[in-house]
Length: 100
Image (cartoon, rainbow, N blue to C red; front, side, top):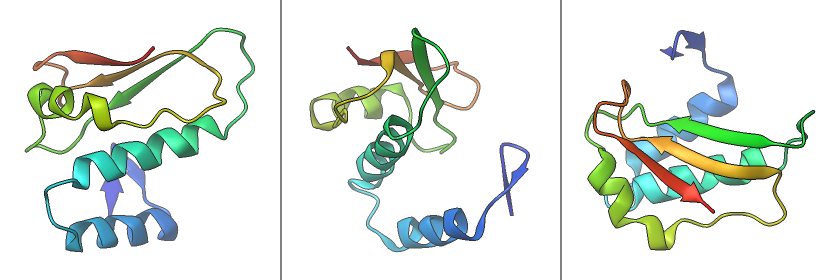
């Protein structure tokens, strides 16, 4: 299985299977918080780091993300100056700033 043209690792495949079995309500929030947590653990070779996440789920749009903004957990510490998420695969529904 591929996502964004890349083969998925066994761990990613396992996480996707778990998400598939979870109720749709809250799935976006749990997945997004997990991504932010994983990205915050990484070290970046720059003083100014902007994280841009691309939403690839066809049912989730900018409005869905904006509705959950108050529930999104930004891990501290993190290396990010700003964090953005594209509302859809091509960015047509807009972009949402998650941090700060």
